[in-house]
Amino acid sequence: MGLERQPTYSQLIAELNAGNVKSLILVPERREVVALFNNGSEFTIPILLNDQQILRSAESSGTPLTVKDLSATRAQAGIAANLTIILMIVIGLTFLLKRSVSVANRAIGFSKSQPRLKSQDQMNIRFEDVAGVKEAAEELNEVVTFLLKPESLLKLGAKIPRGVLLVGPPGTGKTLLAKAIAGEAGVPFFSIAGSEFVELFVGVGASRVRDLFSQAKQKSPCIIFIDEIDAVGRQRGAGIGGGNDEREQTLNQLLTEMDGFADNSGVVVIAATNRPDVLDSALMRPGRFDRRISVSLPDRKGRTEILSVHARSRPLAPEVSLNDWAIKTPGFSGAELENLLNEAAILTARYNNKLIENIHIEQALERVTIGLPSSALQDSSRKRLIAYHEIGHALLASLLPHADKVDKVTLLPRTNGIAGFTRFWPDEDVVDSGLLTKGYLFNRLIVALGGRAAEIIIFGENEITQGASGDLESATKIAREMVTRFGFSQLGPVSLESTSSEVFLGRDLIQARRGYSETTGQAVDEQVKHLLLTAMDRAMKLLSPRRKIMDQLVEALIEEETLHSERFLALAGL
Ligand code: ADP
Ligand code: MG
Ligand code: ZN
Image 1: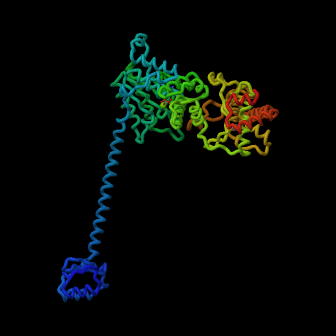
Image 2: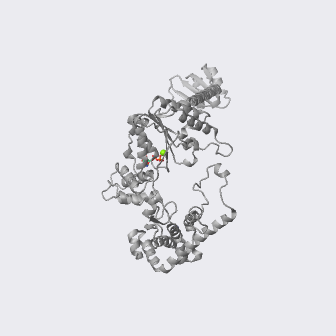
Image 3: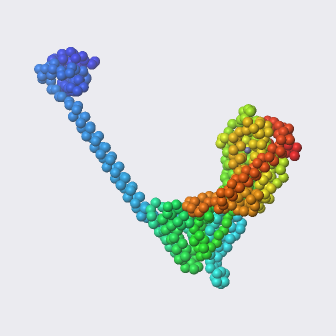
């Protein structure tokens, strides 16, 4: 008898009684029975809860019946699962333990690890890669010569300089110079950043300093370069509520080591910082960092040179004049100039061009100075107001002698919320000499307030906007400096505020910040206000009679969105 289909319950009982079933497996929990027939077919058939019928039939027909207890298997599965979890926890713990051991190991070994000794072929920077800082490079070069040929100095009884401190704003090429000297000198070069001395664990800094110097002495003549030394070299005891002990210990160790090595031992320490004002004065005394080389922001010529250094690896279109771009980038550091060319190269790639052209550099300059462009403004009253505001700045700058010249006025908005701007070409003389005359600064006030003045003239006192707040802020800052630092006001030639306006924790807070009385303070405020009001008055007087010119310029600006210098001057009839 062959069953092809799933038998019903009654069929199963009938087959059982007929002796056609070989064996049965009962699974009470699932309420089913698995029946294996004599012909080899196997079926699973549902049964009743506590089924007695099937038991009786099996018994009477003598069919072997096994009962399968699922709860037992489930319990086993449960145990297995628990075991796995325990195992995982154990593994996890072991892993954690191992890690903390390795952290501890590293901590203990900390004092040993750091200074990176550069091998000669790693040092591929030469003095010619550092442009625009000729004097600094020459002085450093001198040190290198002393290192390589100390005889000339020794004959005169002079000592080889111990330490050179490179001081200058960020991005001016201090690190680069140090690398160049390493490349030129052909002696071992240890480089470490000041922050690497100051670690989590007390005492590490000092022992690192010791370790560094003992390694260096073995390799002398050699150079140790400590970048960003202000991280360790800060004035001791200048913090509020006690100084940072760890840093003080590190610094003390550094001072001791610099004193310690025997004369002419051939170890020269070069350090770089952009915060010389916070350095401990003990670092600067003779015998320690006895040479101080300042690396300043490049002048126009310097900028041209730096641009050409970085243009070496970037294909420029022949029409690009780096000199022109140097003129347009006053106050840029070497790093910023490099970044400018880099942005230009990226834009060139984006447009699938082969050579970097002026237009790419122009766009890159806007990106780095003002921000990313966003979609153009709709022609709205807002756009008109911004146009008048910008024309106000630009027209005043063009009318005033000894003021920055207008480079361009544009209405193309930026993602950072700037809707229009006027870019100036600073007066060459002023920028390069660094000497600001009273007249020049006062004209800057007038130009800065020109935006607000134009808004008042065109739209009236009630319609002026907060858009001028940035202008007011910078104008006030200039005016305050004129009064308190440059002696350009009726208060006379007094200096009321020191140059370093940054509060260096503790020291400056504790020392009285203002060296003048309440009455003088009031007088200063009066003078600042007077300067600003006078400048505003001049701006209004210059713009009011030129309403027609302003209207024409605004129409052109809204139409063309950008007015370059020549176009602007032509339209203004200047
Ligand atoms: P910092 O003075 O902050 O240490 P860096 O030396 O790190 O400045 O300069 C950063 C980058 O800027 C350099 O790698 C280099 O590409 C560029 N750079 C800065 N100054 C100059 C310079 N005078 N000549 C050429 N490139 C410069
Ligand atoms: Mg640096
Ligand atoms: Zn403005």
